[in-house]
Length: 58
Image (tube, rainbow, N blue to C red; front, side, top):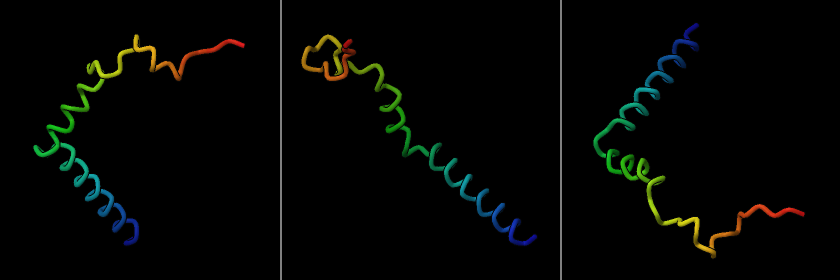
């Protein structure tokens, strides 16, 4: 029984640590950059040099 209590408390503390890390003010800039990645125009699909993943029949 004490083994289960120990692991429950340990995993709860890990959860709280990850939660605090994710919501800390230091991470805000990184998350803002990651949120804008789909809106970046760096990967232009019309660029002919970026066709390595095109579908080929045959």
